[in-house]
Image (cartoon, helix red, strand yellow):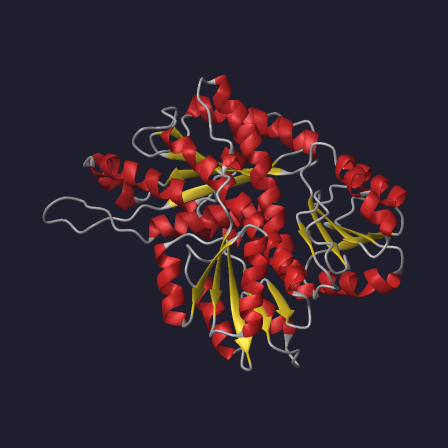
Length: 443
C-alpha cells in the first residue's frame, strides 16, 4: 500500500508531535511521525515525503538535520524546525524555517505550502539550467544576489518597535519605517522589500487590514508579513494566519529572537524570488518561440525527457497537459478567414503568462500547446489546464471589419507519469485524452 503522507514529523514524544500532527492532517497535510532519527531516515528512503518538521527541543535532532536532508537524496525537502529556543533561529543552517516555539497548524500549513513549492521550483531550475546548457544558453545563478535584506516596518513610533528595528539592522537588514498604511503601500509599490513588520500596538485591526490588502495584490502576495504585538492577547490564530500573516511575535520575546525569525522569512522569500526570476530568464534566451515566448517543440522534448528522469530520481510525480484549438464552427470560420492564425501568437503569449514559473509551457504546433507540471498530480494538472482554457475562452479576438469578434475554445488532455514511462509516451497519452471541458465534466 502506497503511503500518502506528505509531511514527516520527527519528535521524541507525542507531546510535541501530537497537536501538530492532528492539526496538519485536518488541513490536508497528511503526516507521519518518527520518534528517532533512524526511523526518520528509513521513512525518507521508502516514501515520497515532501516536507520534514523537526522538534528542536531534542538536541540529538538538531545534530541530525544534515543526515535527514541527505536521506532524501536528490529530492529537495522543505525542512522546518520548531521549539528551537531563544537565539537558536539563526544557527541551524540546513533548515528553511526555524521557529522558537510550537507553531499553530494553520501557520505551519501556509508556510509548508510556500516552502514545498519553492523546493519544486529550485529542482526545476536545476533541470532547466542543464537543458539550456545543452543547447548553448545559460540561466543566472539565483544565489548571486548579495544585496542587504530590506524590511518595511509599519506603525507608529514606539520604544519597543524601534528596538526591533535596531535588532534587524544589527543582523544586516536595511529597515524602512512607514508610520501609516498609506505610506506603507506607497513604499511597497515603489520599492522591493523582503519582509514587512506590522506593529499591532494596542489594536491589531489596522495591521491585519494591511496584511489583507497585500494578499489582494499579486505583486505583494508572497511577501512575508509579521504581526508584532505590544502584549499577548486572546487572538484567533487561525483567522490571523489565514488573513495572510506569516508569523506573530510579542514584545515579551527578545528583539534579537524576533529579528532572527523575520530574517529567516525574508531570506526564504528572497531566495524564492531569485529562483523565479532565473526561470523567467528563459524567455530571453533566444531558444524560445519568438512569437509567443514558449518552448519550441525540440526544446520541450529535450526538457521533458530531463524532467522524467528527474521525477524518477527525486521520487516526484510529473503531469503533462495538452491544449488544442477546437473545431467548433466559430473557430473553423475564423480559421478559414485567416483570423485564427493572427490570434495564435496572442493566445500563446497568454498561456506563457498563465502558468507558474516552475511549469514549462510549449508550442507543439500552430494550434497545439503543452504544459509540463513537475510534482503535480493529474487532478491538479487538469484544473490548471482547464483554468487556462477558460481564460482563453473568455477572450474575444478580432475577426475583421463588419464581423463580430470570435472566441477560441481549447480542448484539453492530461496524463500523470507512470512507472517506467518515457517522456514521449507520457506526452502521447496526454494527447490521446484530449476532450472538450464539457465532455470531460460529463465523463
